[in-house]
Image (cartoon, each protein chain N blue to C red):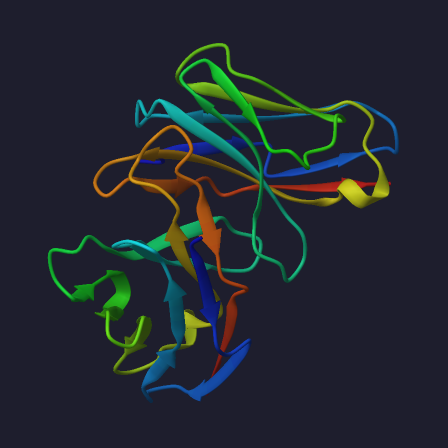
Length: 112
Length: 116
């Protein structure tokens, strides 16, 4: 009964090689988020979608892009990963009362 | 502006003893408050949420939290720790009423260790 699914769980890429992380949801929530979480830190919001409206955080690097082709799916594209982009990437959706965010299991990205 | 402060970065308890993880919040209006737990290399799991319907909130796995407006606190407790409770715990406040932004403001986290 997984509600927010992330694939893959572990991703290894090379410095500068584009990588795409995927997220899907079965909750039919209209808001989806991408967070970056580095070791021993709280998650940091990169951007979110409210339906098809894309909302970028002011300090999110241009290297990070996102696509949401439909309600269920959302992708995080890292165009040229650097060593500093190695982190856990968390996808979340929002719904219910009070508005609650539900997180996926995360994708651990390693950059070699 | 909304904010949360987790007063302890590390807490260590013995199995079977009570757990207390402390959180203070700052909010200009009635907040939505949450506790999330994160086990190593896993996503965040919602433990409980404060809806303003009741000040004592019961969550999963025997955890509960009490909203105290006078103390601006939302401490997380459990009567008896289990080894499986060892994890990172985040106290979180929502910055909106559910509008388009409605971002989460995270505390810095408390790492709970449970000794056998």
